[in-house]
Length: 180
Length: 190
Ligand code: HEM
Image (cartoon, rainbow over all chains, first blue to last red; front, side, top):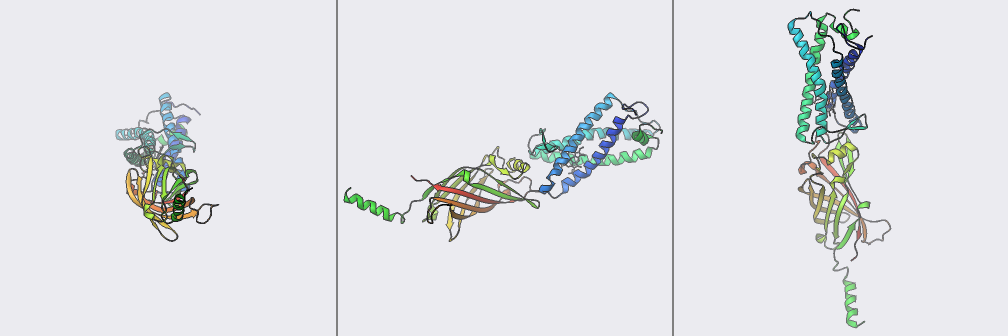
């Protein structure tokens, strides 16, 4: 099982990152929406910490993923698709990378602006990356929520596309290659 | 000693309780406590704010000439969990970097049989609003009945933080903050 990507398929590093991050991102969309609507209580405070911890980990993984793909480029799209399909899937995939960076960054910005420490893994305090300001905070959380909704929408398009293609696209992300 | 002086000092001694001077007290910050409670969802946040300086003058015969002025050190305010401390001292609540102190200055003292009502002006975030505190006065442990030289005073009241512009986290933390203050005061003998 190859670690590197090649013209024929995905190595296990890319596939591992893809499925791990896919699960975590979807879970975070649900979790974040729950957080924003829940009744606060002392025994629920840990949930904010958990959301920030997983979110920041996803930011780091996104950077590793981008770095890995610069180092070991994934194969291009399987070329038997209509032009509009190629364009759409490329746009969705590029937007994913932008969102995987912008979503946690916006959460970090908004959290910094509250003036309350952003604590990861219950012990490390993330340095603030925005001034303590109500304006930064409210705009930050609006952006964070909006990007979350955009990501949810793109996940749907992406999943529908993956099943729609029926040309081995899904299989090569699962198993590395188009054919078993 | 001549007779005249004896008479004068006797009069002074007898008339003492009749024309009592207001008594001045030192507030002992280490044995005093300004506590507060606010709701947090279905839970409560508690905390304390240290006393920076206090001037206490009590007149047991003419309550109107009593006077209290207390300055609290907002930068030292602490809540029952660290996030709440940061939220409370931050710009949306006490804004301590801009307003490092809270002050209370009394306006009137109404003395009842078992308790007293202290009204005054409370300044939070530079905004001054009237506040009413119910006071109960106790002797400190080890003092005799009628000894007013060392006393404990418990003050209770509520403030609406929104009246002072301390509106941060209004969706999580209640507007009404209960104050529970216990001060120990010792008479200053001139
Ligand atoms: C890829 C990572 C992340 C995803 C997918 C994500 C997703 C979400 C979503 C969907 C919401 C609900 C927003 C709303 O409906 O208003 C949310 C809320 C929140 N997020 Fe994230 N988030 C991520 C990373 C982060 C990070 C890194 C931080 C902070 C360092 C953070 C802090 C918050 C906070 C504090 C809330 C609650 C906002 C509120 O109570 O209104 N998030 N997140």
